[in-house]
Image (cartoon, rainbow, N blue to C red; front, side, top):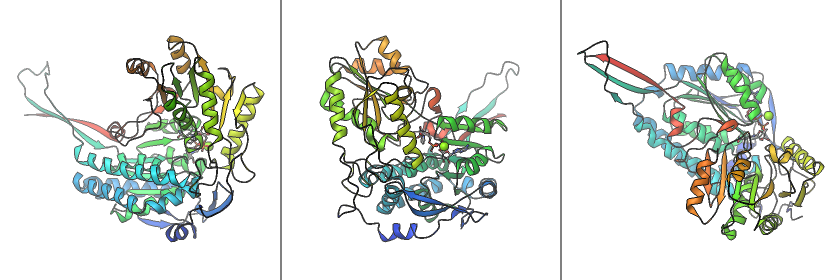
Length: 506
Ligand code: NAI
Ligand code: MG
């Protein structure tokens, strides 16, 4: 066990601004003003490395949702935002990206403290990717275009028409995000909604409310008009559910569990509001017989252990050609044994705690069920340390396709490994044998074979000789029960636009 849990010189002390941010109960942003929940209630925010309370957030409920939706409605129906020139909108969105960069260290510290993730990762990935998303989407504000269309109407011979389409913002959007990448998920959601001229009520996850609230302050500083972005903190059933069901919300965008995704669809069905969903995964990662194992072994390890395994696209089912099976699984296990597990704010930490007691219990339950069903942990399999929500990175072998650990999303640092004989139809059937379809990985030196396999994998993202590569320009989302619609890239804009066809007789 290599958990490093004690405070020491490598632990980043919170800077004055992050310290100030957590020192008082956090309010929420409604109509440009920072307010408490109408009930006056707050809830505790915990440090997952210690289980100690670090901050308080407002426990918003239906009356707060109603106020936030009313503000977003007014900002959309009457406010300047949808009426501004696209160039003016784009400049404000660009400035949000700049302000994220200026405040990188504070945001990284809040993220690491709140979520538990290594601060070196928050500094290098979460915060810069969030800034880049706004910079990327800022450019789209001026590039949203319809078409002109030549008509051939058979029953009006000789008539002439000028027909064209306009892309218009969909309206008020409710956005509900999870805790695994709190700032980045907020950016993925807000960027396209702002670029298209929508107004927003964002509910951040109850586990990790801090960075989203700080981002809302930066959006105000960038000049976003009042009511365009409203940010609420609160629990799923009491704050998320009334937002998803609200009749004045035109569209809901959700990232989280497949179970709640289905509830969102049911809630939205009442008034047929538009829905996009980014849900779970059980992604296959395939190592072929000609793979460069020096790339594939650390690649397979990072595919599952990155972010403590709390990634919807985690490479959680590893398939290895039988020729290399023993070497690869032993290599991934060796990599896992050497991962430095510790508090996120320790700069030497490579893997932090899971986000919460609930997530710790859930992942521990999967580890127990794996053992009960006959899987063997080549490494890990247990809690790490005695405080906080740390779990050892774990490689499970001797798994079969009916085991819970093989079929269900664990959302922790646990990979199942299985051998295969040939890169044939049977391998593809096994790789696709899941209700999910978010991502997949392939390691091989045969680039033709890689693309042929990529074409046959039922997944929204396929990585070849790499994994977990994200870019604001690259669409991300799921086939099957991994979701509806795409985030990022220009694909994401369509989820926030209506198409209006206009036909004039001339
Ligand atoms: P969750 O789906 O319950 O929570 C995600 C968000 O939805 C949070 O903001 C939560 O407050 C909200 N929410 C919960 N119930 C709601 C409801 N009835 N109506 C509206 N909003 C609601 O996910 P949870 O419980 O945190 O994690 C459970 C599992 O979900 C994880 O173990 C993992 O398998 C999966 N998950 C997937 C994520 C992804 O990125 N696709 C992210 C987080 C969790
Ligand atoms: Mg839940």
